[in-house]
Amino acid sequence: MKKLINDPFEVVDEMFEGFVKANDQIVRAVGKRSIARVESPIPGKVGIVVGGGSGHLPAFAGYVGKGMADGAAFGNIFASPPAKPIVEATVAVNSGAGVMYTYGNYQGDCINFDSAQEQCREMGIKVDSVVLNDDVLSSPKSEAEKRRGIGGLFLVWHVAGAKAEQLASLEDVVAVTRKANNNTRTVGVGLTSCTVPANGQPTFNLPDDEMEIGLGIHGEPGIKRVKLRPIDSVVDEMMESILADLDYVGQDVALLVNGLGGSPAEELYVVYRRVAQICEANKINIRFKHVGEQVTALEMAGTSISLMRLDTEMHDLIKNSVVQTCMYTKR
Amino acid sequence: MADVTGKKLVQILEHVAKKIEANKDFLCELDGIVGDGDHGVSMTIGMRGVARAVKKLPDDVLPEEVFRVAAEAYAEDVGATIGPLYETAFNAAARVSSKKNRLNSISDWLEIYDAMAESIKTLGQAELGDKTMIDSFIPAVEHLKQLSLSSDSLESALTSTGEVALSFAISTKDLIPKKGRAARLGERAAGHQDAGATSLAIVLQAFAEGVSES
Image 1 (cartoon, helix red, strand yellow):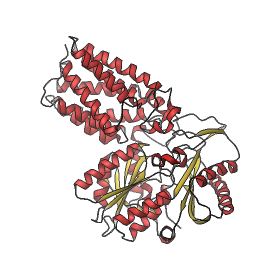
Image 2 (cartoon, chains in turn blue, green; image 1 turned 180 degrees about the horizontal axis):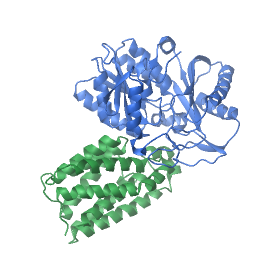
Image 3 (cartoon, rainbow over the protein chains, first blue to last red; image 1 turned 120 degrees about the vertical axis):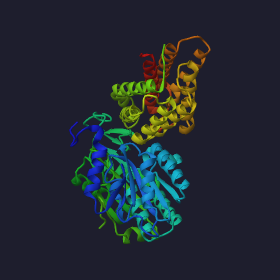
Image 4 (cartoon, rainbow over the protein chains, first blue to last red; image 1 turned 45 degrees about the horizontal axis):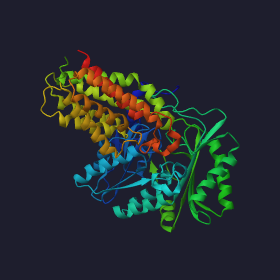
């Protein structure tokens, strides 16, 4: 294990300290592992609280700032935060207009966010949650509610954040976020494993000449291992899975080609080239696009492709919004 | 004969933490086959937190307070799925130990194990056979229940209960997961021993060792 760390068990606390100091113009710490925008609570605005395990930056805390999230809770590496930091972030961002939680569909996150929601409701704070499940290959379509949340959150949160910035009601912010999630699909492919610092060993072994299709962002096994092959044919297969799951043909879409942490931007552009060709062939209109590392899995090499189908409301929200967060600024 | 006061319980939990940490890599390896490979890390972080917190308690602390502090510390340091599960289990142990000065009888520990297992089952909404912690814990409770009718010593009863838990943890190999991250793998996870059932067995073994150490 070669990492820029001290004690492997102190990584998250030390990272948190550095993160807050480096982003002190945008966020402040509101607990040992919770942050909120410096200006929160913002009068009249629904607060958006995100969170999840560490190891995925910029997701999730990197999106706290204007146009996306108001607060975030940090968990250990690849482990949901406990309820406490989620409650701290909720209290800090609550202006009275209510708070929305939005996070990926994992058992740990669901348990802890639900527990925080219950505690905050008891305090009299209006809270609702939207759980994201865009990972096509993590469960069949008939059991879509079991799917994991992965890279698609980056697109969904553009829509959610933009709606909240317009001072829409909690009900409306929740509704548009659900709609965005329902229209988003992601497929990922991993080329290497990753190492949880306190574990010290790679999470799994992937032979040098193989890749895993459908691999999760914590190294959960995907649907199959295949021999390494030219990326165009891999992208073809990934896009085939996405397009088979939801009808994107002839639609307006927002698109993310995401890096998992260990693949250079050059390679992501090679991926994007093929994705753009496929979209063109299927008359899919790319209205918003981003290529880069957003939802990562430590130093795992690989990529994920996310497509979000846009209706007029979502299109206008994502096109016209201003996003300036700790780790991402929209062009 | 064992004399399990609150202070002794603190030492027992410190022993649990040490034993879990010694098994960290093994637990991660089990979890890495079907999940994200961090179970040994989560358990280590949680039990380290527990050991650190209970150590600060005064010598005359009651067992229920030790369990309550353990619940809080585990939850705060871990999160994930396992955090709330151990939190609820330690809280259940605190509840049934209420007002007791000592936990010296098999029936004291039967109550504790039974309450812990039930609380985990309820929160995790898991059934026997779903390939979870429950699959080693419930058979262990049943075993201890049988022993509570005999005249076994507490030490030997808890020791054999730990062994039963471990053997049932090993036989989770034959089960197909229904809960947790492993559930997404379905059949692919068959043949692999469940990490949560295994760490639970290690905890029960460590309890037995801790109680037996004088």
